[in-house]
Image 1 (cartoon, rainbow, N blue to C red):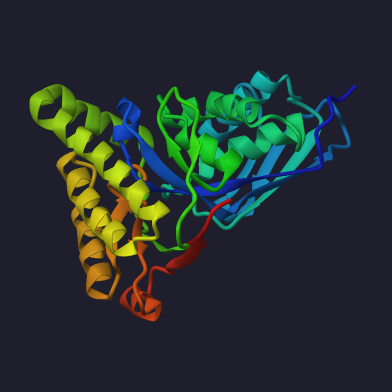
Image 2 (image 1 turned 90 degrees about the vertical axis):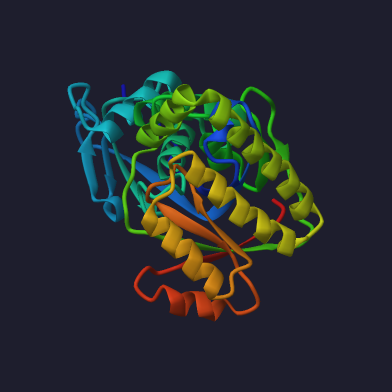
Length: 307
């Protein structure tokens, strides 16, 4: 008998507002759930002995989740299914997403959270879903902080510290954000290793940078809660410089940040692992100037409020 799956499940995308990389070392981060995420739908296969399939056209994925597969997405999904005691045969799963993959917007966490919900159902606890998601996230990222999975499952704006319960943040005013894809793919695991290498080589210099990132997060939370977008914009700029000191920015991202500021953004910073992925800009009074500044990169505008 085929183990049942629920017919539909979804999860949020995410954007890290402040705190990249430092969050791995126990400092706080702030992230926001995106309405753009992942939706999965499951249907039984005609032969229940056939492997589970996963098809997500937006990501050019068409996989059989076979134990012998060396594809990281297949391996991650099998880890999630094993954690949940879910089926590995008899189902066809099809997904839709407006998130680009490998862009720092939580695509892998959204996938693994949605997959866990296909097994557990919509009423599963967030903690259970996050634990299942992390089983898959370790395949992608080696040592994930857990932030992406938590935001993918919960949404809203969250203060996150590894090993502590997340705290919801209520923005004093909606956060007008612009997410600008660089078009440069990158590996989170590689960038986490790059930051760790710099910390191990120069601990007395790099540790204070991580501390400063954490302090920027706490100042940013105060600004978000009080609707102080001008201060938050300054903190975006400070955070981008600190992430550069951690060796996870790039000339392309630095140019994009400068161009966004010149186009009227209150502030701009890389978001996610860095070296590629996306730039995050805090929109000023004229969002159309940001669109004009990046005509070939398809900026995504989102307004984030309390969940």
